[in-house]
Length: 124
View (cartoon, rainbow, N blue to C red):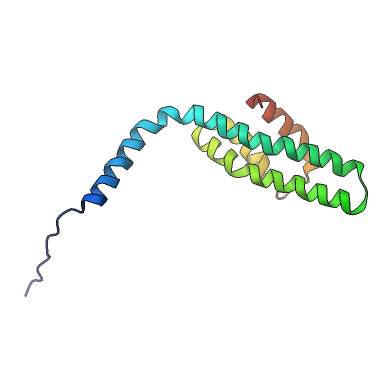
């Protein structure tokens, strides 16, 4: 005995969502570079805040130095999602994303020059 499959009518909400997704996939790539630059600049806002905090941490003592160093690292981590999205949309931002990702393993003191150069090239 063969089982019969019931035919269902296509759900209009699902069909509408699929059509919208298809349209976005066609239209949005043209906006990618402009969007990538904005995201990279936003990541660099976090980088610049981090660099200021990092410099403060080097001139302070004790708990203030530790707090500023931690805040500086947090700023780098907050910039990573924007940098990653920018790199996904435009390969020229791969270096920025990679440097921010490395901040989890490498001391900020070793990343300062690269971060400054990468954000200077973004124009932030």
